[in-house]
Image (cartoon, rainbow, N blue to C red; front, side, top):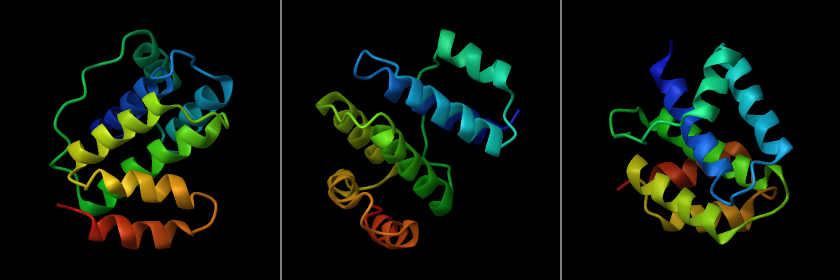
Length: 128
């Protein structure tokens, strides 16, 4: 089983639960990410039932760190309801990934206005 994908799915599940409402759109996005990465549905279901602690994310490559960050931002917007608890969770994940927490504010303010590549350029420049 791909540990990088497992960690990402686990983070997305915990983010989806950060507002105390695991929306259908969030669930669908999580399963879509898993499918794109050939991660078993049964493993996703098990993580939903029993999320794991979020461990160190420092060993990821810059590209992997960006993909994690971009994925959490996508999930925040999946249900069209943005909660402070979700933004705080994203900032904590950004810090664990080695980004400056303000990169999350930039992503939220510019979501839907910038390309993924533009976000990547800004994010990589915000690695601490």
